[in-house]
Amino acid sequence: MERNEILSVAIDLIKGNVDNKFSAKKTSEELVQAIRDLNGGDTKLSVKNFYRGSELYALVEELIPVIIDEGIKSENNPLFDLIEYRNIGYGDEAEFTVEGEGDFVVADAAAGIRDVRRQKAPAGFSVKITPANKAIRIYEALGRLLSGNVDFMKFVDSVWKAFEKYIVESAYEALKSITSSTAGLSATYVKSGSMTDAAMLALIEHVEAATGKVVKIIGTKAALRKLGSSVTTSAELNSDLYNLGFYGKFYGTACEYIRQMHKAGTETFMVDDDALWVVAGDEKPIKVVLGGEGYMIDRDVNDNADLTKEYVYMQPVGVGAVVNEKFGYWYSIA
Image 1 (cartoon, one colour):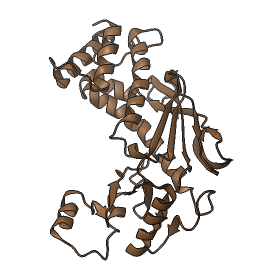
Image 2 (tube, helix red, strand yellow; image 1 turned 60 degrees about the horizontal axis):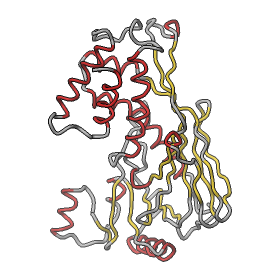
Image 3 (cartoon, rainbow, N blue to C red; image 1 turned 90 degrees about the vertical axis):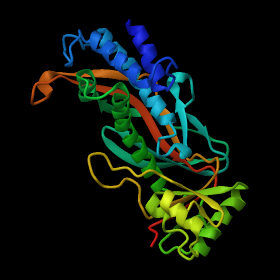
Image 4 (cartoon, rainbow, N blue to C red; image 1 turned 180 degrees about the vertical axis):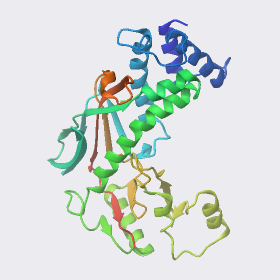
C-alpha cells in the first residue's frame, strides 16, 4: 500500500469504519505489514527509516492527532458525559459562552507545572481556554507495533491512554477546585462530610429546581455505593448491585459511574471514592480544547543513557471547567 492509502485505512480503523469484506483483525494485520514496509521491512524501529522527511515519520505524525481526537470523543472516555470538546484544527473556536455570572475554573499545564486558577466571567461573557503543549513519547509503542507484539488498535490505545490520563486528571483537578464560594454556587449546592438520603434528595431537588432539568448522580462505583443506606433491599436492588456494583437509581434519580483510573506513574486512584456530582442531564462542565497542529520532536541519542533515539509528539491541549449552570457536589462523604 502507498502511504496515503495506509493513512486512509488507518484512519478508518481508528474510527471503526472497517470494510464489511474484511475483519478488523485482518485489516490490522495488513496495516501493520504496510507500516513495516515503510520501515524498510524491518521489525525494529530504525533511524535509517524513521526520520523527519521519511514516509513512516510523516504517517505517524498524521495519525496521532486522529487518535487523540477520536479518543476524546469516544464514549469509552471516563468523562465522556461531562466533556464539551473543541478542536481548533477542525475550525472550532476555543471559546465557551457562560450564561449568567459564574467562575471560570481552569487547570492547565505550563512548563511542567499545573496551576489551578479562577477567572470571573460576567453574564454572557465568552471565556477562552488557551492550550499548552502536552508531550507523549511514541518510540516504545511504535517499536512494539513493528515487532508484532501488539496489533494496530493496541498501538492506538496505548497512545490514547497516555493522553487520556492527562486530560482526565486535569479535568478532575478543575472540578475539585470548585467550592461553595464559587460564584453561582453556594453551600446549598456544595457540601461535605456526613450524608443522609434525605440530604442528598434535597440537593437533587435544589439542582432540578434551579435548572428545570432532570439530573443524574455521577461518581465512582465505590462512591455510588454510599447512596441508599436506608433503602430496604429488594430483588431488583440486589440485581443492580450484582450487575452494576451500585444501585442504578437513587429514589428515581439515575446513577452513572465514572471509571476509576490511576494517577500517572502510580497506583493511586485518580478520582476520589468519597465524592458525588449531581448534574443536569445535558450539562457538560468540563471543557477540552485541542489546539492547532501537533508535531513530532526528535531527541538526540546522547540524551538517553542507552543511546537510543527518542521521539516525542507535542500536542497543544487545554482543559478546564466552566460553571454556567447549577450543579451539586458532595465531597469527603463520611
